Amino acid sequence: MASVVNDSCIKCLTCVDVCPVGAFVELDTQVVVNPDTCIDCGVCISECPQGAIAADGDADEKWVKFNAEKAAAAG
Ligand code: SF4
Ligand code: SF4
Image 1 (cartoon, rainbow, N blue to C red):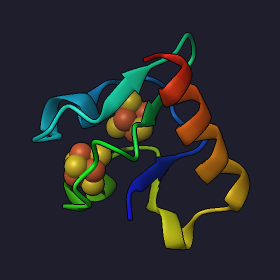
Image 2 (image 1 turned 90 degrees about the vertical axis):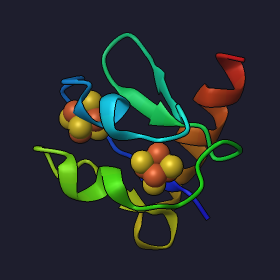
Image 3 (image 1 turned 180 degrees about the vertical axis):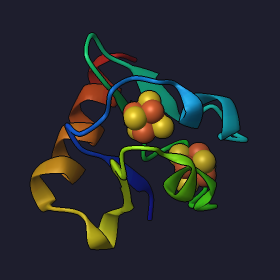
C-alpha cells in the first residue's frame, strides 16, 4: 500500500516536509510518491491543501500507475 498524488497538486511541498521517509519525488509540475519507499503512514493525506493525495486503494488506477512509473523513472 502507498499514497498516490493526482494532478490537483500545486507543488507546495508541504507533503515533502511531513513525510517521515522521503517518499515524495518532485516532477516539473507536481510531486508523486515512490510506492517502494512509502510506509503508508497517511500523514501526508490530511496535510495536502489541495486534497491531491489518497491511499492507493481510494485512488484512480491511472494515478497509481502514474506515481509508480514517474517515481521509477526518477530513480
Ligand atoms: S501537499 Fe499536496 S499540493 Fe502540496 S506538493 Fe504535496 S501533493 Fe502537491
Ligand atoms: S503516507 Fe506517509 S510515508 Fe507515504 S508518502 Fe505519505 S507521509 Fe510519506
